[in-house]
Image (tube, rainbow, N blue to C red):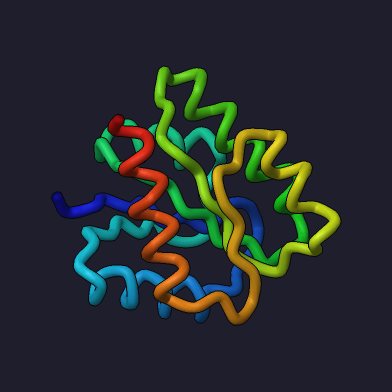
Amino acid sequence: MTLRVLVAKVGLDGHDRGVNVITRLLRDAGMEVIYTGLFQSPESVARSAVDEDVDVVGLSILSGAHMTLAPLVVSALREQGSTVPVVVGGIIPDSDVEGLYNAGVAATFGPGTSLEEIVSTLEHLTDSAQH
């Protein structure tokens, strides 16, 4: 099964070099990647995830607003009846990771996370969700 991953930049974060690299790496790892582009709202990400019937949502947040934006995306997805896992990559202080998990985020990826770890985590999350 080919994983369908929606990757989004939420809020006013305009830094897109990392997310562009990740989308290519995920594609090269055999995943189907839908990139929504910059400046998305939590509601538009949720709507796109449902419309595209994705297996996982990946957020790239470098603005420091991860504690606000990631829970809003999770909430918007749940309001639309979706239980798709949400993962967050970016500059995330260790002290914020537990709060993100408590808000429904399934995994976090900080700087230097290997592609192998990201792919393995996404595969595990989607395998767990299907069983």
